[in-house]
Length: 453
Image 1 (tube, rainbow, N blue to C red):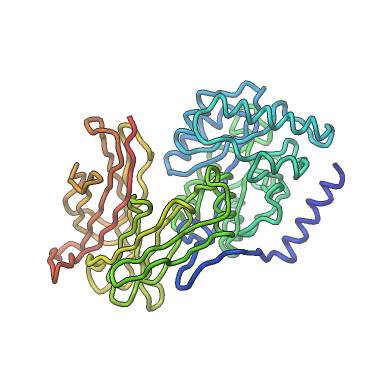
Image 2: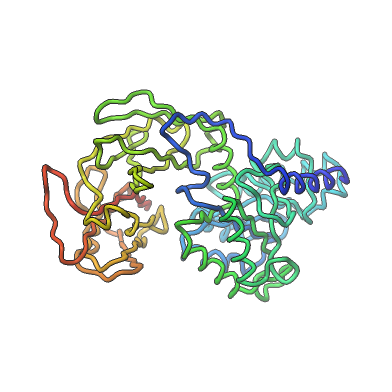
């Protein structure tokens, strides 16, 4: 496997000297596609190897508390906790393949390599209900045969110790950075330095973590340091997308071959096709799209295949944009003119992002979920739940609140399973709601949540 090692060293050189991604998008103006979900400036994926016990006990709850997703690369004959892994997958985390026996691919034949990865994937898919295993982590950081790995996985992780660009040079040898006592990232400052670099170049950081504290794993990382790094990313969540290794890889591939085309444009309705050339059973991660609102539009709503999309409006330079996430090949996106303004006063009209409604967590949920939002001035807010017919289901908040981060729990034990909407309406204390020509004055944002019992 010496040739493969040399190839990976060449990839590092190519990345450092010629890191220019090649795109084959067909994006019709005025549409744009986000380099990362939400038009964030960087992506970060935390990956955990070897079934170390504190990964499920410490790391998963830590990431759950922030609504972040991680990847657990599992060695299938090292007594995996299938119940714990299944619960993690149910909360949106990823379980990937770390082979059956942690085999060193440098010491085995191609036939043995394929048996290691195919058997492990079958065991993972048999023991865990949910998305199929689509990613691989090479044991001992020894890359395998690309042609074999590509038959089973959308991406495979090496550990070349650099931050990837917005598109990896080789999806079957994606770089990661080893953390802990034997790695190059051991302190909160190390994590922050990598993030600053990634933000500058719109890069993708993949961290490789084994042991946490004293669980006996290789290169242990302090849980306090891990918590500090996760908290720092939570504070930067509007700039950084923290997601699983598999989700980031799929987003990149979708983004790079996406086609966005208007098929109809009328005074109050636009129909959009969002497609790619990939396998829809695997590549179904929403991709973020934005466009300026037409000149006479105040705001807009959107749905895909009849399901409402979360639409966020913001002012960039002199234009007001709408932004939404759509699944490639998920059906036509229908954009409709809305007469609801996003402005509350002169200042908020200039910067509507001073208020923010976050995605609830967990989602899907049963029966409790937490909805968080941000206020930058003291405000009167109304937070309500609606069913898909637009009927009010619950009022969670109706009153004045101070500036800052807020969170409220919704206990839906008395509600039937289904898709619901939650809507935040905000206006500064001292102002009153009023209507002019049917246009409601006040910031609002709506998101979707799913109750499964």
